[in-house]
Amino acid sequence: MYEDVKEYLNWYDTRSDLQLPAGAPIVGLVLQRSHLVTGDEGHYSGVVSELEARGAKARARAPITLAVTLTEYACQ
Image (tube, rainbow, N blue to C red; front, side, top):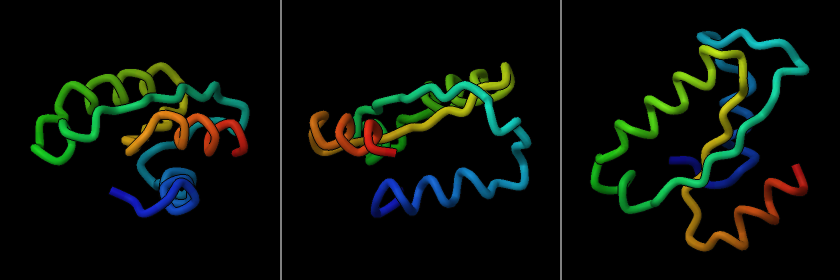
């Protein structure tokens, strides 16, 4: 997990394994934090992989509160 949205987006936008055009659609995903902490995140990985295979950027976030996530992504 990443400390903040900026750190995550920096990693995501510089991935060498994913080449999507600059204008690719962005799909935001709000994940349930407990699934990540317990290692039960396979279903999230599948959704992200499928979105990327179809040409979309998948931006995932596991917030402590939903309000923080919506504010951070709305401002990015």
